[in-house]
Length: 377
Image 1 (cartoon, rainbow, N blue to C red):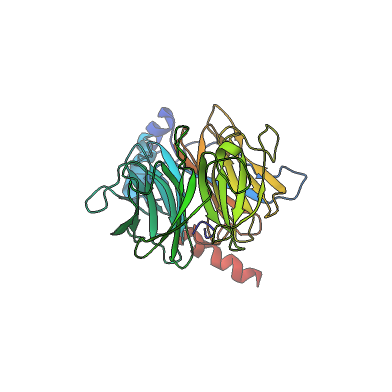
Image 2: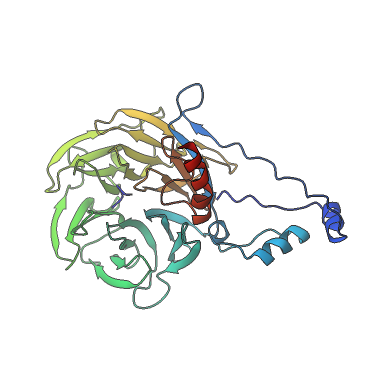
């Protein structure tokens, strides 16, 4: 259900400061240099989104042992964690971030409020070979497109394998996926190739795996696709498909009836160059990642551009991308964007949401915020 959808600060001391500390001197190590967090749009326009953090490794979410933290402060060591090899798809459920990793052949799970990390798909049954598209339903069950196995693998939110859907009989090159909130229907994009006509969205019963219908066929007319990439379900109940080779997003009713489309090829904001994944926020707006632009663009349901976020860069940094791919939005409106090249997931907070509010906040941060809230009352 895509509709429901840190930047680690390493505290280290210079060698002289470490020596003084070890000798018992009260001198504190130099404070880490502050990171300027981008705001979108830029001032003086009213802020809509704040860059909040980046997640690179398990160390960005897992609580550190106090003794380990003290040792790092004294020795200048960097905190180590398990990182991502080549992240692609993203899904989120109540602060639990799922990231498909095609290099690791697993789904990396960063449980932010639970302060833990684990992997899904390393063991039988349910072993993954090339996880790519992800989505979750209202219960938190995770649906994973395995591009090599040409199946959809289903797990519960803790990684226990439940079942699989589809097979090579149904798919040429499966990629994106969306499941409705009830966990009743699953929509799987078959990207196809330049040498075949398997360019469509295949719809399955999420429980028994029965193939229900197909949406679209290869072509450039209304309701047709050329190398489609992803699918998401709108708050309006429409199915939005990223039609990559036609540089547009198309909307359909659940029965496959074409409704409308927006977008065109180009280099300006509001156009597309290499669109990848899409997601929908709680207000129904549609977010589309563009790998060539190095950003995601926000549109209303009529296709009007509301705001571009991020920029392409050969150097990593907050809201900087070289090869962005996956995107997901949680029920609070936080946005999660994966970049394959920089091997990270950036997190953005909507301006109306306080820093200490929502699912993606560690318990300690919520507890620290409570006295301030009471004082304000």
